[in-house]
Amino acid sequence: MPVNNGLYETRGDRWWREDAGFEFASLRYCLNPVRYGFFRRKVQEGGLSGRKVLDIGCGGGFLAEEFARDGFAVTGIDPASASVAAAREHAAANSVLIDYRVGRGEELPFAEESFDIVTCCDVLEHVEDAGRVISEAARTLRSGGFFFFETVNRTLASKLVMIKFWQEWSGLCPENAHVWEKFITPAELAALMEKNNLAAREVRGLTSRRKSAILWKLPAIKSGRLGGRELAEVFALAEGDDVSVSYMGYAIKSK
Image (cartoon, rainbow, N blue to C red):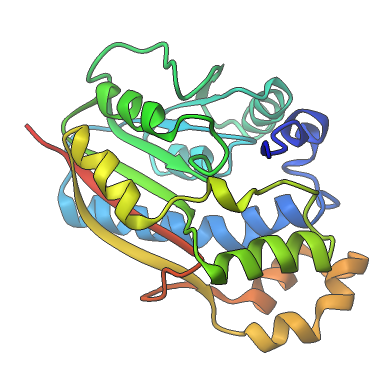
């Protein structure tokens, strides 16, 4: 069963809208602050010297703008032209300089070792060939550079949460926005990275600290009565040790 990636074209103008809907609001207000907080901390701890970032599967630019506002020279690439248009429009309206391109992670139009950081977030579970995306990410990353990732584990827990609850039972996510068989385990990802000279350094889970609150607030979430920041308070998403549903981490390209 194919992943419904077409929604990033048909709904691509919604990324930054306050009435964007659950799928974009949860990315913007719940997930993105946590993953960027982790990435930023690791860059600071690692003493990375370069400032060039490639964001593979940039979507509307949530992660790209975080890096750009911290002074990085950012390039974002995504196959959905509508999403890239929304990213460009928002960056221009807010005087954020980012080079956005339309393109696929499997065929990156950049020279070898062009970037100091390559990110691949909310992407691997959507592509046809995750191995090819990892290979291209490693090719364009300089030796000693950081590869950041965030994706969904393939477990019973992820099937219940991502597929059954958010897509089928609640209807808050579009049909086939995710397909369980496309999820990738940390061990599988580690093997792909090792094959491409990316030495895994750390993996962290992403989980809600207030799971009962989500159930209690579900009617308000479905009705759209909760704004993005209220949604973030309800979810209280944080990094932790539980990688059974979503996880993030980083690797360093071997010299």
